[in-house]
Image (cartoon, rainbow, N blue to C red; front, side):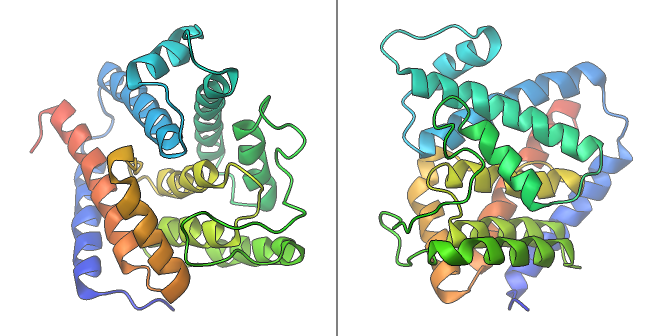
Length: 253
């Protein structure tokens, strides 16, 4: 089991209390929830894509999401990354609504949406070659090991009896460590992390592009030293930020 620091446990307890508070306010105002959902979809899509090098601004991303309009000077790939990410979020919502358990089929389906029209050959298909991760201190396992490692990961996540934020964090880290696809692993990892949070009734964690370097640093530490604490704290901070958006919208402190 993971050695969770006391400060991490304390933060998790605070967030559990915030969840209880938010749950006590349900049902939430319909229009307020709709406006916040639109904001979160935009922010999540923009930052997740920007982390991977997409050059669309948040305003350009908004135009593509809401109107499907192409932005001059931007590539088709960048437009598809926005459209695909939004579709993937809507797919997550359906999974949560239907109480669908995590499975390799779900993971491949999410990845297939991410790469749709960009790399259909590799969309939803485990890599059949070895890869390196630029800037990382670890090397993903040999491609031959990917199927069995993914089977074990899904089984592990589905059988955890631990705080949902820890489960979501571990899923993200271990998925990245396996790096099961040739491309789109980062976006898929963040989607899977938030899927686990959503299933447990927690707000999503949006990793802003401004902290990309620290995000990668905490991921690398977790992957190389099996010390997940800093990464869990990062996820807690981002969940806490989204909690604050909910309470701010509702006029609650």
